[in-house]
Length: 356
Image (cartoon, rainbow, N blue to C red; front, side, top):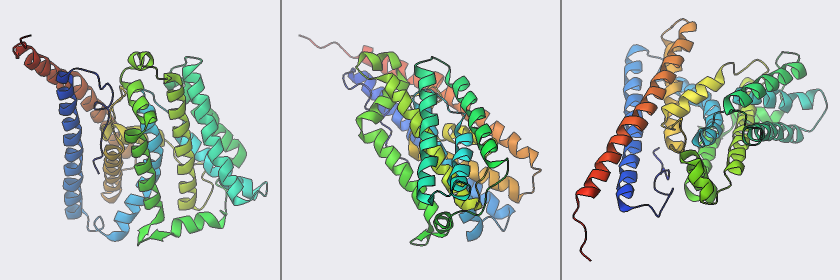
């Protein structure tokens, strides 16, 4: 699941050879971090299989993966935002608004299901656009701007739905939840496809390189001719769209316009992204690591449920995981990479100068 990370390898091809060696070392750290996450996941699965006979059953594993798909889809969009050193707290509220619109427009206004779904997706894009414009044009910090839209979007969802779930859902949602592709639930296949497309965009397109450059060094990116404000707006719009898609998935899973769902999901999404190696400082990370972070967080939450840990401890565990992931990110950035940079510079300085 470890995919290519173009963060350091594509940012500035004209930099000296010494820094090229540094980029290679940092990419190796990314690889080791993903390998470490995979090792932790496998170890955790082994321990849980011993502690709970239910854990290793096909039904439980499928339930974990299907629950993780909703967070994973939201995390795809959040990854784009964090890569430009931003943050989007509105994702859970956009998810809820998308969910109630996709069902309510059919039930209350008599719209065709396809048109209602399109409207739900457009709502996510519009909120993302508002977030992007607030951050770039009004210079409002992303934390504050998305906190405002988080409150507004959930308030609109409550007003429209009356604060209750809307049912029944159109047949298309029932078919989506029941679909299977080669025996694999369709929602899982869809999530993996979206993550693959996102990774291709990040690693193989000019826009993806601009995302990494904007997050890594916005001033240098502007001097290189990158329209950083447009890039930031686009990432928030992607985040809004992914949250809206996740709203459709949660509608299919609950078979209702979920007006009361996703409480606190934005924190779980941020935790999963950071655990997956996406730097809170921007410019570093990939979709493969993010998926591992989502899977690890999903397994932790499943273990809490299977071991009958009191519900309130779930939030405590999630908070500790977020703190640990953030501390690891700071350590990696401030110590590991700084240490490698010094070694590369020292090695470069120790080489004898070439004679003319």
